[in-house]
Length: 545
Ligand code: NAD
Image: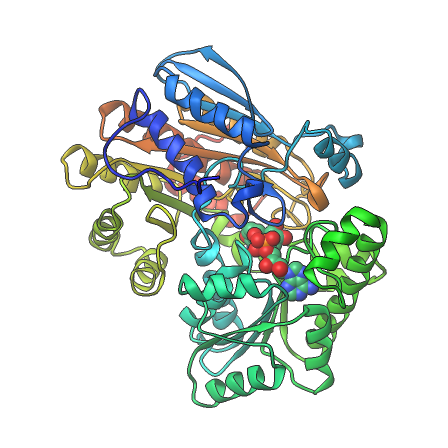
């Protein structure tokens, strides 16, 4: 079968740029994905479409769709085309939503087996994944926040230990180097290590722990940054490093620990063993994965007791360890509460834009515009400078930038003007991660220990999604968790296309303002001072205070 690659250039296959944009975004998540044959984009099982038949039907539907019609997608399968109006979304989708009592991994796997459902991750099914770059600024901002809080502002001479070099975890080595650290990434699949080296996210690889630690030690001594991929299993390597009396400065993990059947590889298993056991004895495979995670988390807890800064980077590793007997697993902090919540209170989060023409110059021109127009935004200016220097493009050229309420709209309207005036070679699609201010409920990741105890209330992402439809976004998605995340999360995604038209000005303004506006109000409602301050500063209309 021919490999899917996003179309480039100015020729349209659809009846308008909005439809063409979404088609290219769909192709782009597959181009950048981890396993195109299975339509898997990242996070072990997060897919772009239910099956190949659905994929082709989506493509054909987008090609025939008129400006005033909406395509409805259920868990990666296109259901129907409806007459709406020219300011309605082009695509709406609901992926993997199960009612509460049935929302567990067992039911999910059964329904998946029957071909009735698929997990869409966050940005996979919503066609917003932009390669490892999508998560890289988040990882970098976490490292930088740790540097400010614990290491006098710099990670030079510091050792980060982590694991997992998959679709998202693959951002870690580059983020570590950008933060000036020496970072060791344990990965069980050599092909993933090679992929990160090929795309320029990882510098060195070895299968020898001694060699890896020597490289790290050398870099530390010279206050130089380095990224090392070590072929091995984290549940064996973490205890081994601990046993040698080495205490890294920062410890985390981004293996696909959320999924015991398709994600985490148990100690002693080869990749072939995993595939065989999935068929022959899935119960034992899951039990072994759980036991291995428990071992790894025990080591992480001991690193913490010895002084490392240890955090969970959003892969449910603590939950899995807790279920497998590690009663103090939640002594490990979650990255969102510890480092990112003050930003989310102001709806500063992982905004991103994709050059649909495929021309990297478009992203560079937008970089220049940001440096010129947003000189007071320290986070953005610092990031854009670093990203321009370090971050290679994967698939359609794209950039991530943590912008907040009001700023996203300003940026997008300026870009729409650049498209209109022919200063860019084609339209730009704007979207964001679902892990964004009001867009996600996940009581063990995004909304852990909310000030008012509203951790598990999923009304917020649902309202966010509905509001985005009312606000004329081009694509709106509502997702819930699948695999090991089933029952744990609900989220909303949004994409809006800057095609240079005056109508796009209207869509961008309302969709982006309201998307971030409800995020700020979510945190204001929970009583966060930063959000209340943002409400006052930006004149958001809160009804009951
Ligand atoms: P992925 O499936 O693409 O990659 C996971 C990697 O872990 C694979 O390369 C796999 O070989 C490796 N691995 C599995 N078991 C291992 C073990 N025992 N030792 C060493 N390596 C092992 O997943 P991904 O997209 O990189 O996501 C990783 C995790 O991060 C997922 O749980 C995902 O849901 C979560 N995530 C967090 C955020 C965030 O914002 N923090 C964002 C996206 C994803």
